[in-house]
Amino acid sequence: MASSGGLSLVRRAVDAVRRTPRWQKRLVVFTVGLGTVTYACQDNQVLQISDGKTGKKKVVILGTGWAGASFLRNIDTSLYDVHVVSPRNYFMFTPLLPSVTCGTVEPRSIVEPIRNIVRKRGGAFRFWEAECFKIDPTSKKIHCRAGDGTNVDGNGDFVVDYDYLVVTVGAKPNTFNTPGVVENCHFLKEVEDAQKIRKSVMKCFEKASLPNLTEEERKKNVHFVVIGGGPTGVEFAAELHDFVNEDLAKLYPDVKKYVNISVIEAGDHILTMFDKRITHFAEDKFKREGIDLKTNFKVVKVSDKTITMTNPATGEIAVPYGLAVWSTGIGTRPIIMDFMKQVGQANRRVLATDEWLRVNGCDNVYALGDCATITQRKVMEDVDAIFRVADKDNSGTLTVKKIKNVLGDIYQRYPQVELYLKTNQMKNFHDLLKDKESEELNIEEFKKALAQVDSQVKMLPATAQVAAQEGAYLADCFNRMNTCEDNPEGPLRIRGAGRHRFKPFRYRHLGQFAPLGGEQTAAQLPGDWVHVGHSTQWLWYSVYASKQFSWRTRMLVVTDWGRRFIFGRDSSSL
Image (cartoon, rainbow, N blue to C red):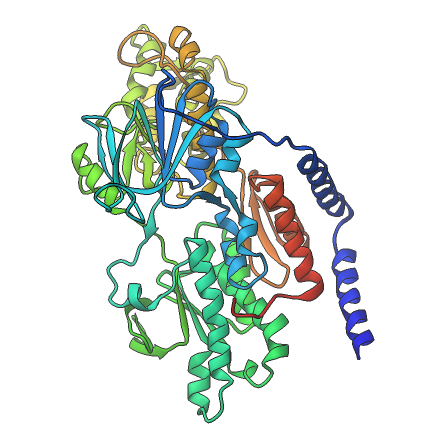
């Protein structure tokens, strides 16, 4: 029997490798091999502690999420006195949190201590594990509180002054004030959340295995409900389905038939931010695999035993459950709400910044990541001025050649407009611009088309990709602040003389993934490239391994994946 089991494991591993395209095998091997050499050869630098008397400008960073860690990773710490305040002393690779809930990846494999990140870069640095509860932009101070009392009064409060403040505190789960959610649902924002879910899943199976339970009680215990059909909720449901069918079904054969996984979505479809082809594939796959997909259902109350939801067709219904995971979007943290009131941004969901990530209404304060959004300038504010310069004789018409130049100027200032214009109202105009450079066209017709853009251009999504790019951009601005003061590189100012100091932040979308379970992943990459299948799953492995913050975590994650391929997921309640 032991020999047979060993052969079965080997066959599974061989089959998995055999199905993998050759170029992806080479990519994974190259990633792991290079990582091993690099990690083995890295130096043993000692972290330099700042004494606060360096004479440099003090940059204080609030938070160690994607935006804060990316900024810290890229800023030149020899130019500034860098201080970090955060309730956690590590960076977490959030896209792999759903994998932690089912034991596919271990928690420590996706976290990197903040002091490690700075140590490898050199320069002086200070970190305090505490939570900022008040920002005072007038006196340029932040008020913080440590978890354990450490000062004379024993309450752990202290104050930090700053020259530049970078706010990257992220967001909290949005419950929409639904009764019972906080008390009875799990969230999936932190490592601790994933660990609690993992323990709860195993607890549900153990409870369902107890003797003297009715069939209804067993069904209730292993009814897993995911509220929210976004990427996080869908990926968790897929991970849980794989965990149950590939591992727990062998350990709990009597319980397997009672397991039910439900995904509740208030909208018409899941994964609405993806291409419709991916949305339909995911919905069909979930239905084939027995995952109960409930769209157009709104959860109105959660108790310790049932979830109450409403639907226009069925009305209000109550469903018993064993475990519920709430994943319906993000909300505003209290510190951000208070800060917005101070700077005249009350009644907003997140902080408003300009295109250089500066908080509107105060000086030397920057906001990045999920706690902020870039205020999109109205296109028409600049278009009139641009056309006036081009139409010097006030004829009301321009040649096609000049129109192209004008559009190029607009695209430079508003790159997000180009895609919209080429696929919507301006498509016909772009057809007119082909091979007719001497023909004259009416300016007002272009203005009418452009006027519709202001209401259509969307805000940037609250994703790790956006936050990481914002952090890297702002760090680059800080590194070249003195150079760009003397030689500004930004666009010409529409109002006033000269140029802006820096080029404005421009988000570059690199694509997105949606793991759907069964070693299948949906990928939507730039250029309208959409693919779903096993090969895309290996592309997902390669990309997520390469995006880890250090070679240590990269090697740990790849090792966890290999362990799961050979031995399966661990079912202990640790």
